[in-house]
Length: 450
Image 1 (tube, one colour):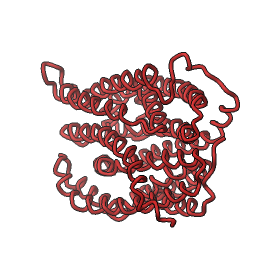
Image 2 (cartoon, rainbow, N blue to C red; image 1 turned 90 degrees about the horizontal axis):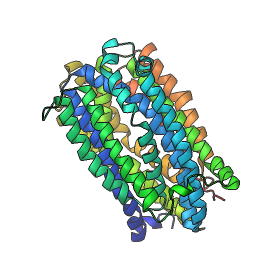
Image 3 (cartoon, rainbow, N blue to C red; image 1 turned 60 degrees about the horizontal axis):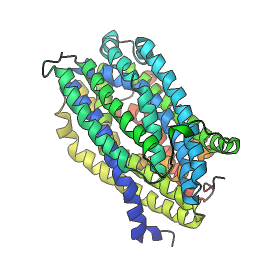
Image 4 (cartoon, rainbow, N blue to C red; image 1 turned 45 degrees about the vertical axis):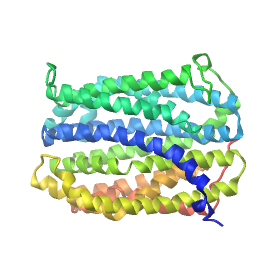
C-alpha cells in the first residue's frame, strides 16, 4: 500500500507536468554556465578560476532567494490546493517586497566592492584580476535575477511552469550568442574575454526579467497578481509566512554562506584544484538538473495534496519520490563513469588539473544516489510537507558542524588527497539524504499550513 503511488499513472502525469519543464529550464540555465565555462576555458586556467570564484558570492545570493521563494512556495502550494486565492495574492506581495530589498542590497555591495569580495576567496592576485570585472557586471543582474527567481517559484506553486521555460530557452540563446560575440570579438565587437561572458549574462537576465515579471503582473491568472496588489498586507498571513518561511530562509541562507565558504577553502588551495573543482562541478550540474526538477515537483505536488486535506496520499507520494530519487542517482553514477574522459577533452588544462578532476569524478560516481536523495527529500518532500524547522536544524548541524570543519581540516591541516577533500566538503549531502528520509518515513514531518 505504501508503494502504491509507484503504480499510479496519475502520479507520474502530475510529476512530469511540473518536472519536465523545470528540468528543461534548469538544463538551460546550467547549460549557459557550462558553455560559459567551456568558452572561458579556452582562455586558460586563471580565467576559469577567476570566474569560478566570482560565482561563489553569487551562490550566497542564489540560496537566499531559494529560501525566500521556497518559503512562499510551501504556503502558496497548500493555499492553491485549498483554493485560498486571495491569501495567495498577499503572500506574493509580501515575498516580492522582501525580494526587492535583499537583491538591491546585494547589487550595491557587489558593484562597489568586487575586489574585496574576491579577496575573501583567494589571495592569488592573478585570479582576482581575472574575476573582479566579471563579478562587478554580474552584480548588475542581481535585482533582475532576484525578482525572476521569486516569481518563477510562485508560478511553480500552482503548476504554472511553461512561461519560465519559454523565457529560459530564449535567454539561453541570447546568452550563448552574446557571450560568443563579446568573449572572442565577433561582428566587429571588442574581444573582452572574461568580461564578455558577463556582458552576455547581463543581456540575458534583463530579457528574463522583462518577460517573466511582465507576464506575472500583466497576464497571469492563477495568482491574479497586479501592480496594485504590491502593498497588500495581512498580519495573520504575515505571521504564518514568517512561521513557515523564516526557517527556510535561514536554512538556505546559511547553506549558501556555507557553500560559499567551501569556495574559500578551495580558493586557498592550488590553482589546479580550483580549476578542477570548477570543471567537475560544471559538468555535474549539467547532468544532475533532475535534482532541482524532482525537488520542485515533489514539493508542489505534496503541498497541493496536503492542502486538499489528504495526508495519507501525501505520505505515499513522498515514499514514491524517495525510491525514484535513489534510482535516478544510480543512473547518474553510470553516466559520470562513462563520460568523464570525453568531457575533460573539452578543456585546455594541465595534466595535474586533469588528474585532480578524475579524483573528484570518482567521488561523484560513488555518491550520486545520496546526493539525489538529499535534494529530493530536503528541498522537495519535507518542504512541501511544511517541516521547515527540522530542515533548518539539519542544514545548520550537517554543514556547519561537520562538512565545513572537516573539509577545512582535510584540505589545509591533514593535506589529504583531492578525493577526500571533496568527500568531506560534500559530507552534508550524504548525511542529509539519510536523516531527512528517516524523518519523513516517521510521519512526523507532515504539517498543515493555516
